[in-house]
Length: 294
Image 1 (cartoon, rainbow, N blue to C red):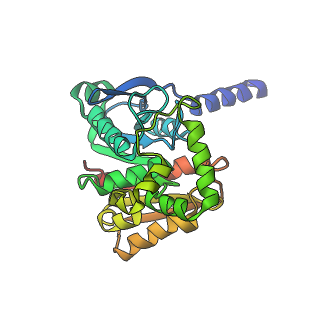
Image 2: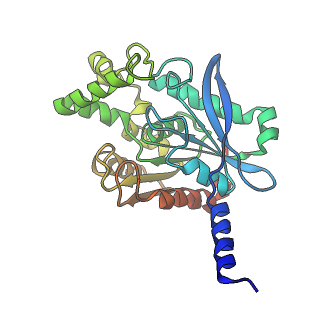
């Protein structure tokens, strides 16, 4: 019979196995000659796998997105993350339009025949979602691509509302200007395309912003899709009251039938609820796999 010490050791080893961090594969995504650094979290198991394109916040990092990529892979989902054009080691320059083209390049990557074979990708089940900047960009991309039927947004920013608040709130404007000044090279690791800093967008006139970045205006296009909106009650960067709930109400007014909203008692970074956050995303994706048609 096993003694207590052996049983304890066995439980410890099993626990470590269950919660081990997976090592992603380094990938390069080619956006028409602009090379983006990325990571591919390979799903565990046999067969072919659904695949999630998981978008960073801004400017993101060179690892995971709130630990969700790793959790998705452990649950049987391939997951692709990447650094946007002009951030970290990715080539090019940052702009909202370039971020949209980066997403398109990620879709192209997972539909290349050699990658379908190498990573055992089920191309009938492709999912799109993101955090903060990435959540807003995922929703904008879905709004402008009718073929995408499913998208999730974690504390996703509405860039149209963000710019309106930037213009009307001088205190916020100073904070944002200082932050972007520190992010830009040579101080930081972000290369901005001319005309894409918030102050430059404001000077050009926020009425000229492409409507796909103004999410409430996109509600008629998004209402036909399968949507999951996640927020944090204590989030002061992308607040539920100003960003998440107004979008939810706009979608309701457009008679959205496949719409969920979830809120955690947490801040913008979900530091205290990442396990529950990842589990919610996983459960939502698994709930109706027939939805995922691209």
